Amino acid sequence: MTSNKEILELVQKWIDRNNELTEQLAQLTCKFLLQEEEKIMKYEDIIKGFSVITCAVDVDRTEYLRIISDGIKERTWEHIVVLAAIINNRISVIVRVSPMAIEQKIYANELIKEILKHMNGNGGGNKEFAQGSSPEVDQIGYLIGISKTIIKNKLLM
Image (tube, rainbow, N blue to C red; front, side, top):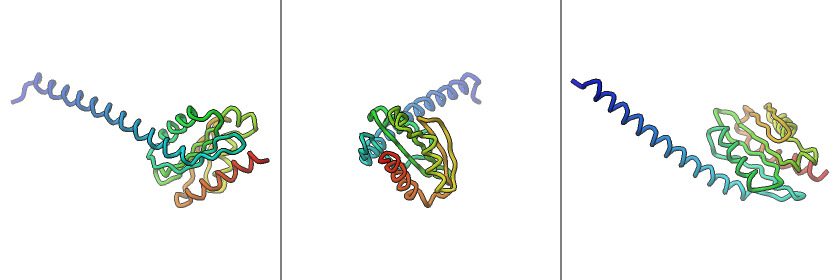
């Protein structure tokens, strides 16, 4: 028969091992997101001085889209970013714009609404950051294309 002390020691070992694995997972996730960010930067177009990035990303959490967009924000001073991923059978979309884009009257909350109205979706946010979703997962390529077109039209007006 196992004593209470032995059971507690086993439980503590499992807790310690879980903590180690959680830390390893966090490190691997961070490494993965940095690699995704590197790939995404290859889709960068410079339009009227703005780094415009519209890209579908292979992640399974909206939080990861935000983290990647934060990294892009740190890399590019003037930016307009639209990232999308299929998460839980929906297209999740985030839009991030720089202060200079806001000065040019390009707002994330307006962009997300304009993009998603073509996709039977909805979203919201503020001038700098917005997010939304659409049920039309088979149209993610169209969403990326229409995003770039909308942004180009706004910048070239």
